[in-house]
Every structure is written in structure tokens, then in C-alpha cells.
Image 1: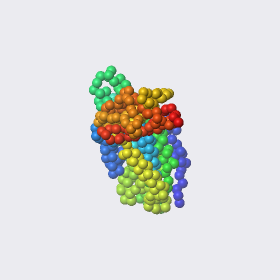
Image 2: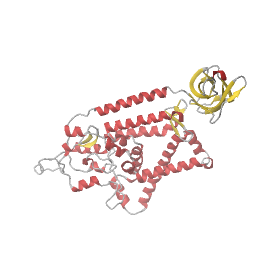
Image 3: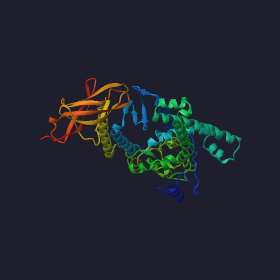
Image 4: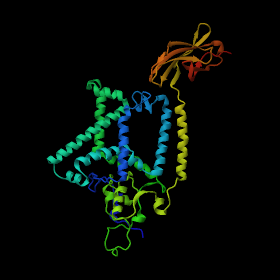
Length: 469
């Protein structure tokens, strides 16, 4: 018979975990248990942290690994430079990322949140470890917060928050390096504050933000602020693998008893409460899949420790889908998952095509706004144009603009000359066409961007002239 939950359990499922009945903030004191999955999470976090802090200083072909410079409108991803003209690539890449998130969530639930999300990595694997090191495990930290202020408490709290500020400052510096570049960051750090007031203020603001997030806001980022937790409720289905409690095996739960006749039918759950004690968001996984669950797997580790002690099979709490628990079926790659995979494959193919077919040079040509045509000596008609040429490489290059039609001439007012690496130049020029070649009000003219006698790009523009019958 399925166990009926008590009124207290039902109310606890409907209540906001971060708030007490009095309306006060409920602080979480998760218990630390270092099981196999925790060790794998720690290893993952070490790799992530090394990559995060080293990222701004790694170069690929003299370009940073990642740079998102919105102020200068320059973006570098894996050493490839992208400009505002490549905005469609960002849109397409964003769509690919979103579909990948949807597919990952459909297959594995919210594992990203517990294992890869920067908020969880920094909170649980950096700041929480500092807290454990200085203040001790859950019971000691709770007792320390409850006791009145004294020398011991003041020293521990001061040490903890100073280290929190230090790591927040390091994170802020690294974050800023991804935005303005490591060279600019080093200039801000090494030069007087007066030389870079905006940069210094930005560092202070980001440091305060990160400090408040990891010292005060904490798990509320995952349970209240982040929209992904609410999104998963729409994406999960009966075949999604999530951290779940096997109620078929665990219920009815109850304490161990030497008198076997006292409880003739009892599940494997001994109702020890450790799965709740280790949860960083304070949920009871036995109540089913919940929005606050970040799939950190701490409850799996601690439950397996108990199962080993009482000589029961492992994974009373584990990675299960609803179908695995209720219908005893193996996980499968469903039609829904295959459809999303096909969409991702198509979108990735299109994205890769556009990325690898990009030219190192890009030219934009605009006819002078509001300008009429002019009659020139020799029977020519002229229009004035503005052009911008972007060099997406780090190597300076000489370029020229050449019409496809040899009858069309180019007279520069401001010649493009050399385009520096990673920069752009603007040029102004006249296009001249013999009046005898003009037969309509607007004529399409093709211009070639030439680098080292090689056509890098062909651009079409409109030429306005008199209509000759």
C-alpha cells in the first residue's frame, strides 16, 4: 500500500524553504559528507576553476581564448575574432546553445546546476569550503551563529569574510578580464587609480556584487532568482534522469528495529534525515522532484553511506527517471530526444559553415545619403560612397577596392591603404561610370575587395544616374 504523507510533510512541500513561518530568512547549514560523487564534483570544480582563472591569459594565434568586449564591439571566442557584422552568428550560436540546454535538461534534468554552473562551483567548492575550514561543519556553524558576539566569534567571522572579499576580488578581476582583456586589466592594476577611475570603480562594484552573492544571497540564486529552475518543470518528462528517491523500494520508511515483528513490512529507508541535512537548498528528496533540487548528488553520497552500514543495496537515492522507478524500465533515448538532437545537428552544421566560410576581411559600402549624381568631364557620371573595411586578423594588410566592370572607375578622396590587425578603416571615394553605359535611374555596381591580388569579398551597391533612352 502506498504510504500517505502526513499533513506536516504536505505543508513542507508547499512552503517556501528559504523562509520561516515567521517570515524570517531560513539560513541553510548543509552537512558535509565526502562521498565518491562529491570527490568527482571536487575534481570537476578544480578543472573549472583553473580554466576560469587562466582563461583570459591563454592565447590562440595571439588572440585571447575568450573576450566579450561590448564597449569596443569586439568579441573573441576560441581565438576567432567576431565583429558586429557577425551578429547573425551570435544569434545562431545562442539558438544552438538554448536548444542544447533544452536537450540536456530533457535527458539529465538539472545536473548542469549541481556540477557545472559557476554559481554552484564557487558557492559549494570555494566559499562553502572556506566556511567549513574556519567555522566547522553544520552543527558548529549553526551554534556559532546562535551564540552572542565574543572574541572567538568575531575572529572567525572576520577571517571568513576577509577571505570571502579576497576571493570575490579575484573573481571580479578575472570577470573583468573577460570583458576588457587581460592587457587592459593589468594596466588598471599596475597603474595609478587616477589613470583608470572607471576600471577601478568597476572592480569595486563587481567585488561587492560577488561578495554579497556568496556571503548573503547564496542558494536563493538557484531557488528564487535563476529562471532555469522553473524552466526545468516544463522540460522534464517521465524519461528524464534526475536525482530521485526510489519510493517503491524505500517506503514505508522507518527506524531500524531489533524486533522484526514490530514492523513486519518496512522499506529500506531508515528515515535518518541525512539526505535533508546535506542538501544545500534544504529540500527532502523523498518528497519527489522539486524545483529547488540542483542535482548536486550530495543526497546520493550520504544515503549510500547509510545503505553500506545497514547492508542494503546502494542507490536508494540515485539517478532515476519516473519510468525507471514506477515501471522498472531501463533508460532510453526517446523520440523527443532524437528530434532535439537532429535539430541541434542541423543548426550546428549551419553555424560551422558560416564560421568557416567567414572572410578575414569585411567591407561595408554605403552610397552618400541624400547625394545626387554629378556630371564629370569626359562624359562620366559620379556618385560618392563611404566604405568601412574590417581586418579580423592580427596582421596588418594592404587592400584596394576594384570594380568588377572595367568601365567603372574609382577615384579616392580618402584611400583605405593599410588596415591594421584587429582594426577597421573608413574610406571615401567616387565611382565614375560613362554616361553612355547608364540606361536606368539605378544601376547595380559590383565592387571587389582585393588583398594581395586575391578577391576577398564582392559587394553590390546602387549607382544613381540620368536615364538615357
